[in-house]
Amino acid sequence: MGKHIRTVNANQAILRSTLQGRGCGECQASCQSACKTSCTVGNQVCLKEKKQ
Amino acid sequence: MIHKFIFDDTRMVFDVHSGALHIVDELIWDLLEAYGALPEEELAQSLSGKYLEEDISEALEEIKELTDKNILFSPDPLGGAYKPPGESVVKALCLHLAHDCNLSCRYCFAGQGKFGGAPGLMTAEVGRKALEFLVNSSGERHHLEVDFFGGEPLLNFDVLRMLVDYGRSLGREKGKEIKFTVTTNAILLDGRIGDFLNKNDISVILSIDGRQGVHDAMRPFRDRKGSYDVVVKNIKSFLESRDYRDYYVRGTYTALNTDFSCDVEHLASLGFDNISLEPVVAGEKDHYSLRDSMFSQISSEYEKLTRSILKMTKEGRHINFFHFNIDFEGGPCLPKRMSGCGAGHQYLAVDPPGTLYPCHQFVGREEFVLGDVFTGVRRGDLTRLFRNSHLYRKEGCGQCWAKFHCSGGCHANAVIHNGSIEKPYSPGCLLAKKRLECAMYLAQWKNAPDKS
Image 1 (tube, rainbow over the protein chains, first blue to last red):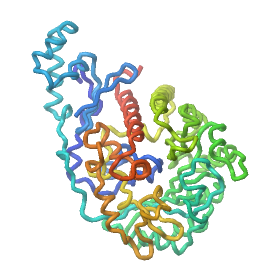
Image 2 (cartoon, chains in turn green, purple):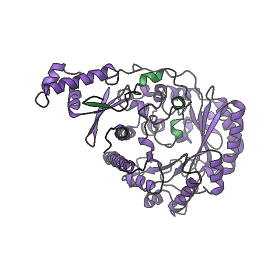
Image 3 (cartoon, rainbow over the protein chains, first blue to last red):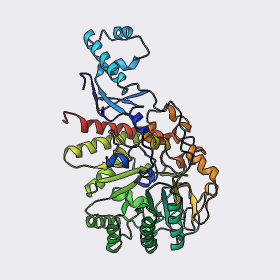
Image 4 (cartoon, one colour):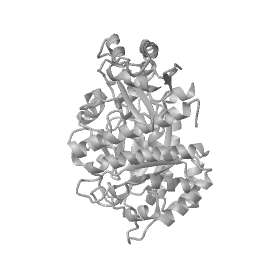
């Protein structure tokens, strides 16, 4: 944490890294969860990540 | 690409391409206004009347450090281009067990459950074929999903029960795991049905709109009597029987309750922790439809809801509001964020006669019929269209700061309002962005060293 900037998610916030070894599609379809009328993908859980 | 915004005096900077969220002071905020556009010396000079020179140098160092770490001004990891997988597999079905309903909800996009057609229940035979279609179309995918939907699916409970048993045995035989969910208005949710759902680990989405006046105005029985009392009694009794696990209560807000934070608070006061409240999908002529003139007020309402949820959190009550529940430490991978909900290729809907559609929102639209569960998908052109309509094919999405969280939004909303799945419904974009800002504010509070 710097004097002027606090990074909330410094350790995990590299989306680029999720291009490798991911994209398996085992996650939930986003409209099956609770919305049914407004697609939201950012709040879906990655099953691979959950198991680690 | 960065997005700067302020929520209740907290200055936040979101680095779009890495997903990093930074809380910054006023000096950094001011520097970022022109960072990259002006030479550093000139930038420092422009702020020298407001800040000390040494503070400016220090702040510029911090910006450089984060930039070097690729968590500020990070480049697009995909370079603005994406190629989806060549082959489609189906991993989720929305099974319309009943095109009929015991309520007469005024905003029902399903036309009181019938989706513009005749009322009808799905037969066991069609249901079995649908499950076989799913399993046989799922390629290497292990986890599959089936949502029992309607109309009101519990009007066809015997078939639901049979399909869960059949799905389990089919899954064992084919090495698949099928997760079942039910979306219900809770009118028929009695002890017998509740026991079955509990014993079979079936997740449940329970429809309730909030305050009694709001709920009863939009969700009456066919004789126009309100359904609130029956719904609340049944939901409470059911959730107690499963220790309040695996559920969402889900409501719809309309032009008649743009003060919907009160409805979320009401649902929380009833003891419900997992809450989703969604904007109504309606035509412009409907008196309850959300109009452009309301969006500023709706944005303020989401802010009000954020403060309310934060207050409850500080008091020890943890409300999981669906659209604010975003994992900034991980979450979905980039391929998932590019492909969105999967409608039309990974996720399909099946109506009672067994017709396949891209999703529940398209059911009844002849031009979107994909095939049927007996003979499979006939419209490969449509499934390809949906598969290829990823984030970077959608109008305006490549330049949007919220792109990796909304993934281009709802295809159906785009078609309904703009006639093309590649032209997102812009009011939906505004709401998605506001909800994301609120979610970021709550996430930073959870991470803050001082939680006062």
